[in-house]
Length: 209
Image (cartoon, rainbow, N blue to C red; front, top):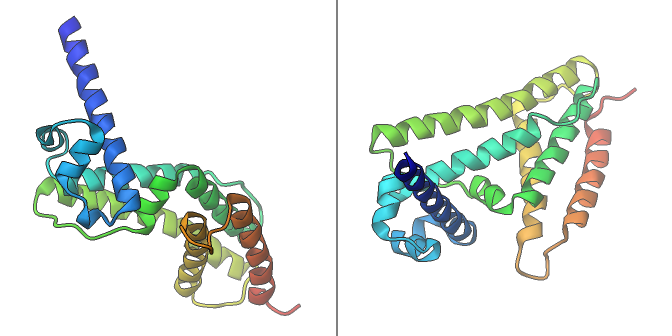
């Protein structure tokens, strides 16, 4: 029993080291250019350990993407509640900002998502789970948009286009916190900019009194 426990602990530690090493590389480099050897070197493990735990580099990438989406959902699906659908939308944006600033590697994985070769049933199943996770978060905002229109809080505009605009705004401003040039802004500034954008947006998309 003790040997089994030690082996399980060793496997868990190796898997965790691979996850951490890969997450750091994927967050700073196009995942398509990262090699298995680079991940192994960053994690301090053998190349064979990566194949043993995750099958392929794509399998490792999808595992990390799933975990990133789980973290995002814990923020956005538990955003502050409000009776106002419009305020719930803004609260979702606030939750997503908190997620991104507190989990930068996960945010980058989601925002820089790349296609992979789904050449095994395991990868296909992982991709399907990822699509369901994304759809769940998107649908929650879409419902709020429709309810905001029904409540007279928003102009009756196409929900999908408004949703795309909101996500693009949140992701674009958050992304400025991770730039490596003179256009980089701090976490506090991200919140200030998005708060101002929300105020401007609210005035522009609300129907005339």
